[in-house]
Amino acid sequence: MSKVGIEQFNAIMRAELPSAADLDIYLESIAYGEAELVLPYTDHSLRPGGTIAGPFMMMLADVCMFAVVLSMLGEIKLAVTTSFNINFLRKPSETDLRARGKIIKLGKRLAVVEVSIYSEDDIVAHATGTYSIPPRD
Amino acid sequence: MSKVGIEQFNAIMRAELPSAADLDIYLESIAYGEAELVLPYTDHSLRPGGTIAGPFMMMLADVCMFAVVLSMLGEIKLAVTTSFNINFLRKPSETDLRARGKIIKLGKRLAVVEVSIYSEDDIVAHATGTYSIPPRD
Amino acid sequence: MSKVGIEQFNAIMRAELPSAADLDIYLESIAYGEAELVLPYTDHSLRPGGTIAGPFMMMLADVCMFAVVLSMLGEIKLAVTTSFNINFLRKPSETDLRARGKIIKLGKRLAVVEVSIYSEDDIVAHATGTYSIPPRD
Amino acid sequence: MSKVGIEQFNAIMRAELPSAADLDIYLESIAYGEAELVLPYTDHSLRPGGTIAGPFMMMLADVCMFAVVLSMLGEIKLAVTTSFNINFLRKPSETDLRARGKIIKLGKRLAVVEVSIYSEDDIVAHATGTYSIPPRD
Image (cartoon, rainbow over all chains, first blue to last red; front, side, top):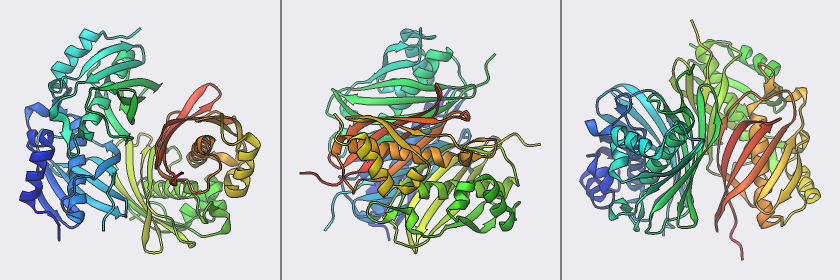
């Protein structure tokens, strides 16, 4: 079971990641080691060619990784991304984006998380990230 | 010599990457295969611990790569990021961030660009990205 | 169903990737979009500290990605790796390594493949790669 | 000035990375934070299409990163690669490959190194890697 709830995570995001909250990104579901977030479609996320900007997908993926980490560790403030890799696979449709993240490995000092981003039923990007996590008791 | 000028690139950014423009990111210098951009420090870019959010650094790096590509190809609309990898090296100070990008290789269909991000004199992140570029005459 | 068989892939590997064959890497199972390969443990793969060298895990992951691509496209000679990213998660035990690969997306010009490497039941590395694939009819 | 010498590093490589030594990879020059290694061309490194296999380039890049780390820290046995990212840029010629590595950042627990691989005068691959380094006095 997730160690943070949906409302709790959305409040953390509003307080500590206001830029993600400004994009109206929200957590839709969360379980231990898994999270699903949505980036609602707006004209604001356009870029040349009418597609959603890569940086928004990176932000969505990064927040999703953060949710996955918190689902396993509870509310901690000192987890920081140390590396992030993303492949953009296809031009998204003009619709909401959905990020599905899951843990690959939770170690003592490092968490590795994978995120797939979907536009309707198509995978449009795939990211892997590592988080440095503070020592736990 | 760069195929786009500073004013021209900043106008492209305002028109086509409004989210980067909203962060007040601006191009400071550009030459053929090289570009330097600045992300001014604001409270808005904070995240837990008082540091600048990873996604903002990703956005800054991505826009810097775009500037490097345009410096060599001129104003094209169809260059898209296909992959992006970043290592976060150190917590930035509460000051402006500066991204310095340079081309690694410009091929027929792919450009590879490297970006280092500095906070004062310290390198705080290093990114590599690939751009798919449309066929040229 | 896979478009190449186990014996067929092992023969391709011996003919065209002799260095992988020299390590006695072999394909154990294959299905459409999925492949599982084994790198038998030998003293030769040691590195400081008695663990299996990172480059061997990279080779195992790369060959696994190649198998996944061929499972979907059949025997083609011109698929080449264009990018490769790996996170090393844990020191492997002194035992065989097992790579499980699956397709993330097969597009017209690009395939993205994910590979997890296991030492006994522990995941020890996770890799993502992109392959450029020749135009098909 | 480098904390390991050329003969010293080549001996370390023969003792601890025999697979790299088997490929006749050798260190050609080293300075504090910089190293240059050569992978001599042989038929053995062929792959489909007559080019040098990606995994050999990965091994060359990884060994080059290791040399860069040792140039700054001296002979240590516990530095391990934690992540590795490579972009393959162009098909190499049938000639030796040359890897030029330099430090991006040496921190307390992590070193980030960049390597460019050349075939004659052309850059054919570009890699970035992170090393976990043991605590120092």
